Image 1 (cartoon, rainbow, N blue to C red):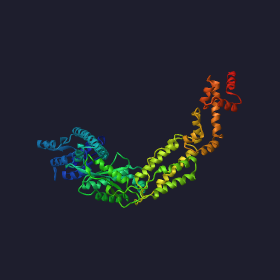
Image 2: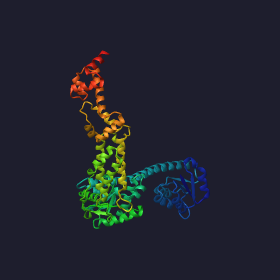
Image 3: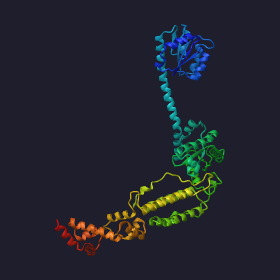
Image 4: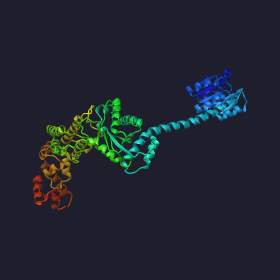
Length: 535
């Protein structure tokens, strides 16, 4: 805390400095001025909390200083120390917010009392100012979040919304009611590698940077507002309400600004002009559709209006046409076959005349659904946690690239192959899963074909792999487990043999007895007698 002593008599300044225990009051800097004019310069530079001032001084007196301080340094607390017992001077002191009026010669007790009160008031005011500063900081921090939420709601709620125009007036000073607007969409799914690398720690800063760049141009023209859309991941939306100028012009300026700041350009989808706000969602849908159906193999346009949308590719590629071959390679543990199957799919995509974000998204979804089908709960599906990574599909020049996309699917497919061929993250192989399934459904009519269908593995692969891992062929394993279960039921229950036969998967009692004797050298009845005889 700082204090300023203003008096044209040096000995008075020295007396005040000697009488006050400054450290006890938390005042560590004592400043001095010999008149009001020099005091103003010090106050502007140092912003002292406490002012001691005389009233009669050359150049500028105390009254003038009090008047100035009330307007320009209202936080400072002022104690007048004067040699004049004049009512008019006291009145001026009160008028301009002085805390006390002390007479010379200075009384130490009065000085300490006045200073104590002044510091108490200053601290109370400072606490209020601090709360106000913190509140303003919070408001400034929350304002972008509030506007993001507000405009996201505007896009989601259909119909007239009177609060929209009130908010535009309050936040943007727009007095005239906006009748029409259009929407532009920027998706970070088309962010190039350099941007991803620069903001790899988190995309919140990227959203902040891009919306700030957009709003710098929009605010300058009073033409719209850019925000992070809460209704869809990875989207920045611009609502453009200055319809006497084409949106393409402002988007070109914005893209130039993005290029100067980040050294890349980004693509926008543009919707048609609609009634504001009740039909704004229609313009958003158009803008989003335009950017998601933009042909990534053509880079001539950075803004994609509906009028220039590319025609739908007639040679549509369906993942389902390539899925059986990929599935068979994965479930058969054949890496070479898997690579060939994926290569055929990738080649078809690369040779296509048109590739869009929507197609890439659909293929990824199809692949995920196929994964679930391939796994079919036979292994830990948690091994395939849904990632939040957005795959790169354009380079820094905006040209289409499939490399990262291909690496992603190759990695996913090979991971599945390893899990199905060797074992899951919990060391349970596909053959162990089959054995567990047999144990659980022993009473059913199990066949190699049934198990093949259940686990989406070829019969040949199951036969070979089961023998390798379990040291027993599948048929013998099923029969052995059934006989072991039958022996337990014969020894521990009074169930009829026909009933036991059914419970262990034999529909014919005579056939059950024949197999049982082959495996145990005795009939079911003989085994039961032996078991009960030993008890």
